[in-house]
Length: 357
Image (cartoon, rainbow, N blue to C red):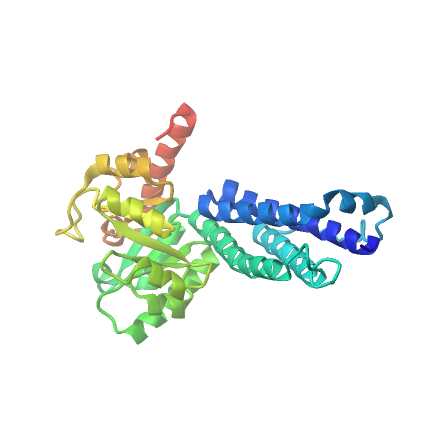
């Protein structure tokens, strides 16, 4: 077999192994995604095993010091999603090279071109899953502190955009639009304005229930209930960087939501709710139990106010969702700020004591 062919195989074998190991570690250590990590690990092992048939011969022809390509790569600062794309492309290109070489007469009895083609197409899908997970993770990391649900019915005649702006100025990290009274065309105009406001302010914008409005307004995500479209169906329609929140009321629902791919869950009603009097109260103990069985962010909801919001954070919530505690107050910005201060006070006490929820 020509020495040059062995050198090409050796170089691309290294690219495949190194690139897949990087992707595998991102899935394992950053996303904590066991299934995705296992798929990448299995792919890496199978491909390296196939190419190791030439192990000694390839190593014999390796000459790194004389490689004209050494040191020609331009280094530049990149974010993690860009690094994932770069490493995935590197592996995909290497697979294509080996796929083509495997068609040569000297190699086609040892390597099977279709195996590398299949691996390449599988990696296209895994790359998408990995990138989606990372981009959604960047959003869910914002899901801390105060989550304000801008309910148009609760606001009454007060201006929605003004109320959301004041809530953000007061420290709200997330704004969710909940509307049961306007037509879709009017609601879309409102949603686009809120998306623009949140984008400029660095807050997340979530649409409640309506997939079409979430898509058309380019919201950061959507919040749904168990009676809405199935989570899997919603995920197929959303761009890969959009998050999905799901309302849960039992431990089983919370666990199923995480298994099915929800990015966060809402747990409630924690206390009796003035805006949803029919809601079943699950209490703080239920919140603690949910915290023990799920690893995704938890948004507590229902009857939360200045007096009890610290208890909610102490019980394991990453974020506390409020409606009347902000929207029915005369000074929305001040009311929001007071709630945020209570959250920060409780969070600091945990950090100071070194205790865990």
